[in-house]
Amino acid sequence: MKNTNNNPLPNTQRQGKYIKSQLKTIFNYLKKHTATASMVTKATGVDQKNICRYKRDLEKAGILWEIEKKLCKRTGFKAWYLTTNPKKAPYNNQIQMF
Image 1 (spheres, helix red, strand yellow):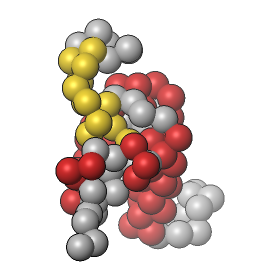
Image 2 (cartoon, rainbow, N blue to C red):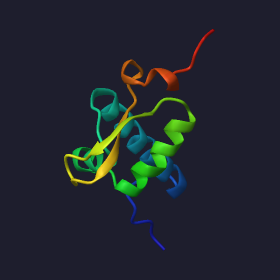
Image 3 (cartoon, one colour):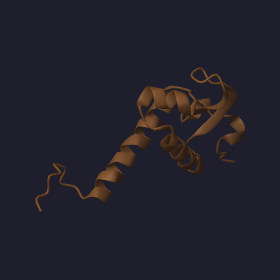
Image 4 (cartoon, rainbow, N blue to C red):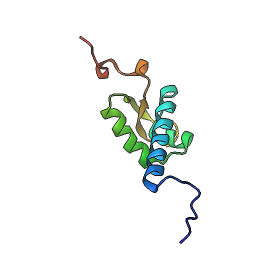
């Protein structure tokens, strides 16, 4: 059976690169913008279910913060506005060095 796939990487390696690419896209977008998951989906094209998973991973790593819960400009429903910019992080969520 002939391999019709043009990508030489095994499927798991391709998936890993795709996930890292999406994660990097979300991280970089939220570093420049404060947005809800719905707004990030619209701006980046990354599926909202994936954004929710990456959000959890970035929060656990201590590099994503929920800024405030208010009406989303895209959906009109209350949602958390997110950022990966440490300058915008709430003071009580920042790692303290003392």
